[in-house]
Length: 203
Image (cartoon, rainbow, N blue to C red; front, side, top):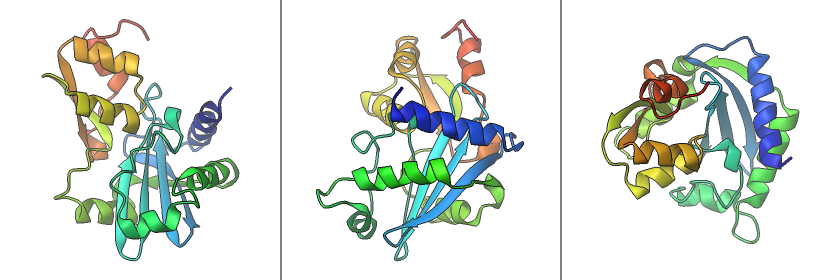
């Protein structure tokens, strides 16, 4: 069993024990790493495709990205657009993010999470507002539409959302693409959407 599977299992267990399983709710972890405030959000509203994202803040710089918990590794994370002030603080001696992710694993395993509403979280809403004119992609699944899925969008979805390449290829081959949203109240059940579109026929 890989570390990634263990981490996802821990997050699912903590979320399922929270009794906070509504469309606009999640569990949140907050800690500091080298003067950077790390805010990690997780929910399994759609149990087949859990949602996870982080907000990093330091020296008036903010960075927000969702990520694929099944690929929880410094080589796979979509952190290429990190602001330089934050990048300098979280890189290790080899200019990698291995230590940053190892520390995150430790906090996920050992710390208590808060039960929160996305709409009421000050850090999240402030970050979304400050990034509203920047193209970072939505945090949640919104809908599928008949359109060609580009290779760039395919890769971004794989690295940032808990979707396997197999499922993404099925969506792409069926002639659909995925639209995301940062409004938790507009999100939809991705698994149910795939069944309704005939892309999968199980579950």
